[in-house]
Amino acid sequence: MTEADYPVASDGETTFSHSDQPLEYDLDKILERPERKVVFSPCRFLLIGFEGRSGEGRKLEKLIQRGRGILYREMNEIISHLIVRDECDKVLLDASKTVSVHHPCQPPVLSPQWVLKSFEAEKLLTTASSEYRPRDPVVVQSCLPKSGAAETENRTLTKVKDKTSRLLRSSIFYLVRLSPPSGAVDFSTSQLKDEIVNNGGRILSSKVLEALRVDQQTSSNSRRICYVVCWGGFTSTHLSIHNLLSQLQKEDLSQIVPVTPIWLKTSIKEGKLLGISRNPVLFQPQSWPFMKLPKKLKIAVTGFVGSERMALIQIIRAMGADYTESMKPNNTHLICREGKGEKYEKGLEWGLGVVSIDWLYHILQHGYGGLNKADEEGCEDRFSLSKEGCEDRF
Picture (cartoon, rainbow, N blue to C red):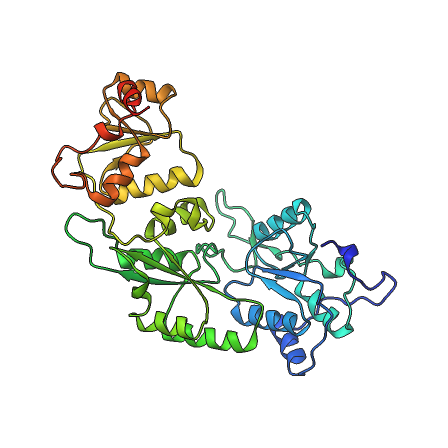
């Protein structure tokens, strides 16, 4: 949707300057009144820069919903308005402007004041006015002592940028560890929790459960996702034997999506939440535990790109083998997407175990000794991509 698709106030109408009061104060004043309006009914909003200011963000969301606007938690192709917090991090503001230019709908980048004033005016005010552009961070000079090479420096009067990533914000997580048998891959629960929290996610708790109940009563537009991170063997019955998950399901408070630690780690490395269907073997919990590889193995890969390659790196390391970015003669294995290419030929020349991805998947389920645990030297011959092996297979 573009600006031409919905009515706006003409440039000749009165415009409003940014309020001198804090945003939360202005929001409280408006929300004290119970009226609902349809001013935002054609609009689809994304709020940017409100992490760490949950009070402001929640109240702004509530006002938009009162005006019949639709809120999204992530960028998509139908966003019509980008609402950016005043004086937010400059990098974030610049990124929002870039997105606006290249987005199919070219959503305007606006201050929260545009939302407040449009609601009060009961119509969408013009988005062209500079009055509704988010304020840049205030930069002042602080005088340092004049000694030696000391110089005056600029300091930005904004909160120091939090090292916490926002990748997992608005997502909830619950960890289900089923004691893996001997020889199976295990993950550190505390480390996984740290990765989730450090990337903006929240761990399901009684407090979070109660917040979801409140959200369900006050909002019909946003439904959070609860990612259940499972390992050690998983079936759907495990969702009902955990009290918090059972309540979540029973009350239908969020969408439940079972995933593996490999999905979590790969998504964080790639900087985006990946679709489970991209790699169901590694991203979707299986009824069997992931088995380990011998530590003596040094494995390189070729032909895989993007998230597929990153997922391979994560699982090889989790299985206990040594992943190498570059291939050398002391590598033991080369996993190939297909039996061709310079790296493939070099692997054959060096006498490495040149195998398909099915070799890794087979070991993942049945272990290095194979289905019958009889082949202690592995099953390379079965999944070999050597020229002789390829002839045998095809």
